[in-house]
Length: 488
Image (cartoon, rainbow, N blue to C red; front, side, top):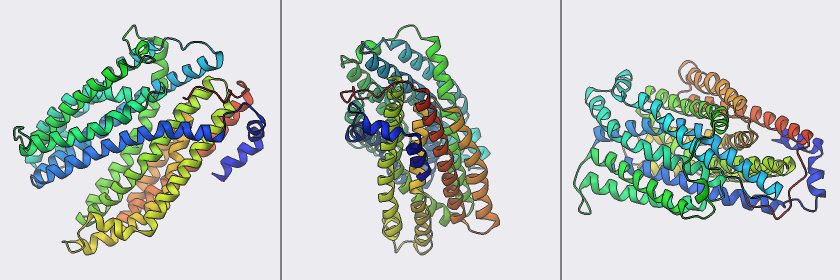
């Protein structure tokens, strides 16, 4: 990132920012980023808490139920998250429109056409998701799963698919567009409640508690369905009660230009998300091929790093909105300042998490594994090694995530996708596979491959971001907006 700061100073934009008496101050940029990122991080952590709750409660039913529920739910949400990323263009268009309205001091234009286009796109995305997940039994058979897991997994998936519509079309879209409208607090009120409701229903429907019928494995899928529809309806009601949101949330004729722009921005975002998920899923499969000890250690490291990554991801989504807002307002230097603020925040956060992982890996691994349990003597040392490797690449991972978000705010999504594909597949997947199986590094080799890929990607995205922001500054899209700017 030193290259990033050097190029910014060479461009002279920092002098422009410091000399502007009306420029939004650093504190205002940082507060805006944190205000957007905090609800998003709580939302994402709540979703992770739901997955953990499902796993713990299904584990009490035995290994088969845990395998069926775990693998099927993982497949469902990985596919869902990948296709949900295609809706990300909606937030960019909305944030830009808000920026233009502020710069012109005019009333915000009617954005119901963009929202309706987002709803239509989400409905269309349900079709390929269904095409992939309906034959879940065939997918499980392809990976040589036992016949019982294949049959029960297929039935479990068919139940879960009843939760696709509320999760993708309603919750998924609202989670993307509400922060762009400046209404991210609605997520702070609803998403943690979604995790609590999911846990309550899982416990009740799996084990027959709280007066609910005992349904065993199938109760977990039913809990996901009921939770999804309930929260979707609640979010719509709360959003419609907001006077600033109500005019934009009505369904009207889709905007063809907005739809095309959403596809142009969103499809590469979907490809990038798919490449990232593929890298980690393939690493998990390769870790499983190395044996139970490697698989357990990998799951520990992945669980810890995924939780820490939620903050970086939320900052990435926040800077996406802020950059799009300021570019819409014709203030590229303010967009740069928002980007630098996000980089500073993510570096501070990842330095903290890296320190924890490097200094206390033994305690973290011991939290997941009973030190006196079976295989603990093998799992804990390997998990410690993987956590240390993860600690080393924490900062690089956070920086690449924020750079990717800022580039999306600049309407640059295709090249970041290409960079992710050409680093994740040959370096993280194939390179990690070679280190693990050919060079004999085992699970550590898989994580070294991941770390190397993320490091290369961080450098490439940083360079791309510098070039893009310098071009925006040279284009002279306008002066900085005043300090009283509407929060984005």
